[in-house]
Length: 214
Image 1 (tube, one colour):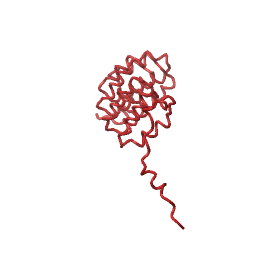
Image 2 (cartoon, one colour):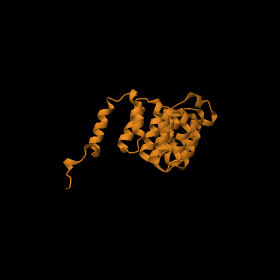
Image 3 (tube, one colour):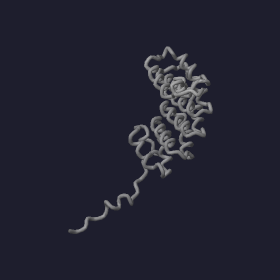
Image 4 (cartoon, helix red, strand yellow):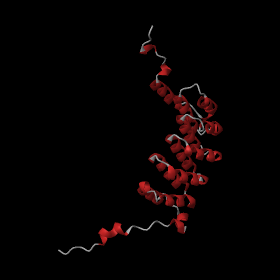
């Protein structure tokens, strides 16, 4: 006999499942880190449950889950990879900066974006070269934007030099000009290599024209 909608198991309804997970977020605490880690690692569970567990690990600051998250960040499931990378950034997993930087070369743009954002959250100075190298060959605007934001968060002279060097990419020139101004670092101003580019004389041509006689 064919089952109707009323006979469907409630946990097969993703909206219902999302509602249950939302309610659980209010009662789960840092002491439940072991349970959350187990949920995140269980390959038989729905991706929604596993992603929720990863988000909870980050929000509850479960430091003991960092090694498990690092493994999940190298899986071939983009949803889990992106969630795990974001969580590593939130948990400031400084021992895994190299692993996160390697994810910048992943085939999935959402994974690359999450890797860039994670490095920015950690203000990982050692990731500047990887970020700038990826920016040059990156085709997706959202990933490039995440890289630029991360470079501004690092706030080291090397990161600012990287931003200046990327200004030759005309597609994002206007975006790149904004960040050094909003994320100003006094140490960078003292570096002669980071002097702002000279303004184009043609931009002021209209202002330099004499007023016409009445």
